[in-house]
Amino acid sequence: MGKHALLITMGIALVALLGGCFTPLPPVLELDPDGTLDFGTDVDKLFLIIDNAGGGLLHWYATVLGEADWLHFTPREGIGRGALTLTVDRTGLEPDTTYSAALLIVSNGGEAQRTVTVGGTGDEVPLPALPRVEDVTVTGFTVPKGMFAAGISGGLSGSGGSGAPAPSSTTGSPWAASPGEFGSVLHEFVRQFDRGSGAGAGSISASGSATRVAPAALPADYEGAFVLSWMSLSEADGYRIYSREGSAWNFVTEVAAGELEYDDDGYGIFVLEGDFDVGEERTYAVTAVGAGWSEGERSVEDRGIIVPPARLVTPSPGSDVTGTPRFEWDAHPDGTGYGVYVTTGSLTNHIWHVVLGGGDTSVRFPGDDPHADPSLAPGEYAWYVVARGPVVNGKTGGMAVSKTGSFFVVE
Image (cartoon, rainbow, N blue to C red; front, top):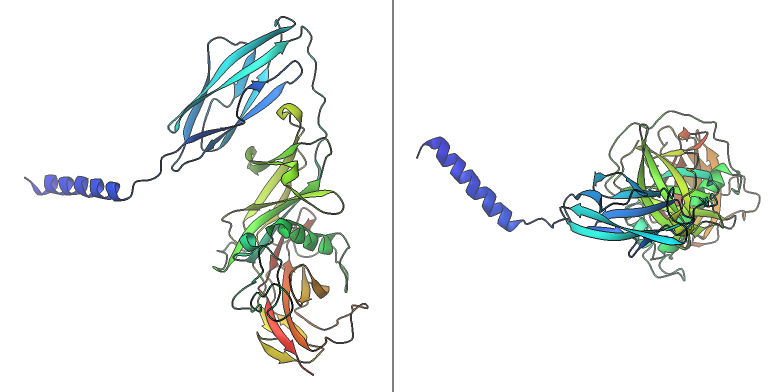
C-alpha cells in the first residue's frame, strides 16, 4: 500500500472513531401552533412558526397536498427557525361551505402536517386592522454576568436582606433570584436618564457625543442584552419582534401579552439576551398580534448598542469611609452621562442616586440632591455606576451597569 493510500485509510478510520465518540444531536422539527389553522370566514392571514427542538441545523420546505388554489404561503423553504405566512383568496368559494387543505412541512428533522381550513362567504369580510405599536425604544445593556439568570433582588449580608454575600467589585452583583422584575429595572434606568424622572442632579438630554463605541469583546465577567419597550395595546394578544439586517426584516420571536413586564405607564418591556460584543448595534421593530393570529403594521424601528461598563475606583471594596464619601470611576468611552447609586440591600432599593454628565467621573455624597441626608449613617453599603452613551436615534443607545463595590461608613 502506498503512503498516500495509507494516509487516506488512517484519516477515514480517525473520522469514524471521532464520529462514534461525539455524535451530535439531530435536528427535530417543531411547529407552533398545534392543531388546525382556521381562516374561518373573516381572517386573511395566519402564521405557522417552524422551529428546531433538537440540535444541528434544520433544513425545511413546505408544500400543499392536493389542490387548494385558495391557499397561498411564503416562504417555501428555509434554514433554522422561521415563520410561514399563510394567506387566503376567497374568490370563487361557495358561501356556507368549509374548504380544507393539508400543509406538509418536510425537513431533515422529520415531517409534520397541519390542516388548514377556510369558510366561503361569497363576500370578502376584512379583518379589523390592529393599531400600529407606538413608541418602541431599544437600548443595549451590559450587566455583570449571572444577573440575567439571577435577577436583581436581594440584600447585603447582615443588612436584613436575603443573606447574600456583600457586593464587591471583584465578585460582581450577588442578587438573589427575582428575574420577573429585571427588565422593569433596566427600563427604569432608561427613564431616569431620558424621560426626566431621575432624582438628585436630574436627568440630562441626549445631546452628548454620537461617536460609536469601538468594537471589542465584552469583558469575560459581563454579558449583554437589548431591552425593548413599547406602549402596550389592549387589542393585542401578543407581539412579534423583528430585526433588520440591511433592507431585510427577520422574525426574531413572539411573546404573549401576559408574558411581558409592564411599568406604571403601560409600557411593555422585553429583554432579548444573546452573545453580543461591545459596539454591536441592532435594529428592532414590533408588531401586534390579535385574534386568529392576525398581525398589525410594523412599528417605527429603533436601534440600540452594546457598550462597555465603567470601572469603579474609589471607595475600594470593603474600605472604611466617612459619612460623605467621594465616589470615583474611570471614564466610559463615548459616555454621555452617569448614574451613581448607593444601596443597602438591592439594585431596586437604592437609597440615593444622582445623574451626572459625561464629563464627570466623581461625585461626593450627597451631591446636589436636596432630598438626601447630609451624610450616610454608620453601616454597610454598596454602590454602582450606570454608564450611558452614545446617542442613537436621538436618545441613549446603550447603558452599562457596573459591578457593585461595598464600603463601610464609620463613626
